[in-house]
Image 1 (cartoon, rainbow, N blue to C red):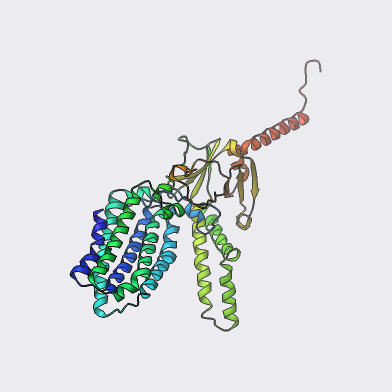
Image 2: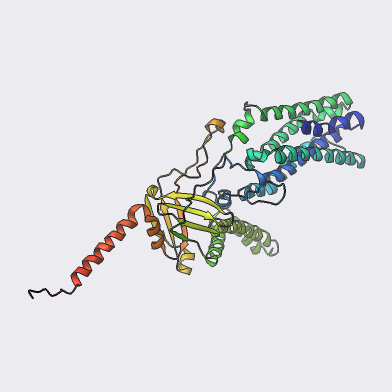
Length: 436
């Protein structure tokens, strides 16, 4: 509460004691949006909850990294950082934040501001004030008080959206009138409206009421509390992991394949058209963009399947991330409905095979017009039996036999044993008896 009041005190002090004009006031409002977006980027990597939206293999670019479990610890007072938040950070930093800032500056320009050197200095001074105030709010409420434990990277992005909507509406509706009626009373009224909005937003965050934003987007209460994957305490009976050379080759193959089987393919078309018209240098730009998307895809693929170990505990198969030292998923033998072995280009190159265990689990995400109430949110399905793929193993039969393949491998082993017994009986030399 005190941090919110302190950040909002910058505007009335400037209007009442420093003689700020409407242009300075609205410029400080835009600077506050920029400050909130900046501190939002700081918050995202440390959000502990999982987003309440579809995560998994559907998104080939970021899905494997978003599905990662575990965290990276930092020395000192910093909380752990979660690799699964990196995709949201990249999307926010390179798409959402520039977009919101562009909308904010566009709305500010609609007020027809006259920015002189003196006005720019006042805006800069006010911007530093609100930046510090929002920073104190972030450090005290989000980090020191443990607010990051109640947020996901998705819910952290809600306050900037709401602030942009409120300030944008304020500038669009009353901005022209503020320029025409340039007096302290009118500006003080605008500052009061802004303060009432911030206090009301803080009240809604601490109450059980759910407004339009919360029903359409969700909040920290509707995000998923992470549950660790249960891994048996005993030693595994069998374990396997792709070699580093195979994992790197697989990442490179997936990277190239993604650029030619996704929307990134248009980059090659644009580059070819530019080359056709003789713009060889400009053609490097779409090729660099395709390479960037391909690199992201290759990196997420490597982190998903490279530094992982598949551990078999007779009736349970667990995927364990070696880098994060955290189990990622588990599959019980009784839940397996089908086992298949396939080979892709990497398998054929290195002489390996890929094993796929199928289940009856419904992996399709629930589609709803509004976000469910907090008590209706699905819990974390960390220990659910979802289909599992064991990529690039040197001996697929050993993996199936170790896990038992839902009973199929055991039946095949018994059948082979019976066949060998019958063959030995047919070819066995008779032992002479006393009668002979």
